[in-house]
Length: 113
Image: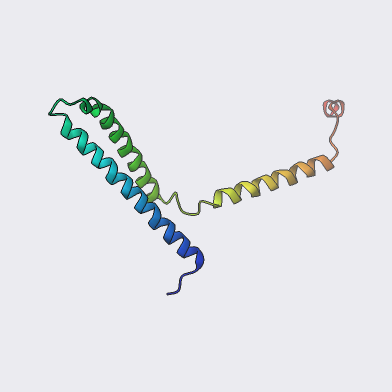
């Protein structure tokens, strides 16, 4: 199967993102392990255990939201909303131009019936 330029670009970008996230996760986990190892020794780095723990919980929550959103299909057709917005704007402009061309009754005419 032959791939087009766009498919190759998406594939390369996807691999690059996965590698970047994986390397960041590995370095972060290395630092977490270092902090956990310092806690029993009573070293100064142990002061950050609560902060790192809360950070991990928040990161886990955001990761779960990302997975949930991905599984729901929120990342498919991301450009569709932009085009829908442009279509709505064009329709509003057409309607506005139509109402400007159409003569409107004055307030006195409207009150008199």
